[in-house]
Image (cartoon, rainbow, N blue to C red; front, side):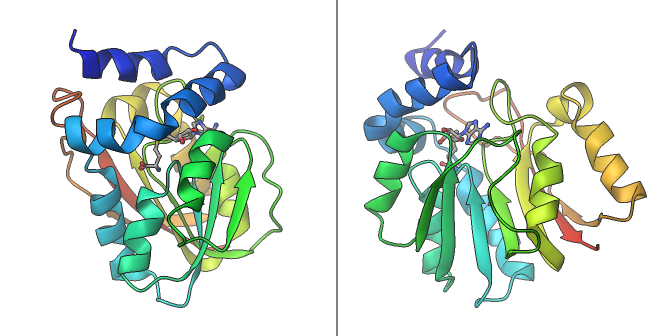
Length: 210
Ligand SMILES: C[S@@+](CC[C@H](N)C(=O)[O-])C[C@H]1O[C@@H](n2cnc3c(N)ncnc32)[C@H](O)[C@@H]1O
């Protein structure tokens, strides 16, 4: 196993949210160098490119699992300026603050109830967060609640977790309950070509319908 894979396995293998938050706090200052420079993290550009097709520029957007703010930085470059960063890790949010692209920062845990009012966002992005040992499939229910009808939810997901991580069940239930409809499902891609070349990720785009 390479050093890069060790770091990824180290966060994946956290025993609980507290340990996961502490590990991200520790990783925060070198996260971008490791994830972009050394691993080739492609989640943010692929997700923001998909979002830009559907989300109007004046939208209020939740970056759920914002980390150090890579997604917010790209959204800002695409002309989005009403951005809220939310993450489990204060250390990651501290890095995101330095980007000067978010208007608000919230430390919250996906998988629990989010402290945002219903229909309070026009869109939500969650990139690299709905994954092994991180935010569970049930997090999607809360993203649907806080995004208004007609708004969009964009997230990355591994095809193997779609089947085995409970996502298929939650996503299908939201569809059959008329809460959202699928707009776009990207092709499986190597989102971490140097860190996890064998692991594929897909970008999903849903429109909230009720
Ligand atoms: C791989 S990083 C992705 C960060 C950023 N979205 C990006 O693309 O660079 C995963 C982030 O999700 C956060 N995270 C993990 N589980 C979470 C949860 N249950 N609730 C909120 N944030 C979580 C971590 O603290 C970390 O900042």
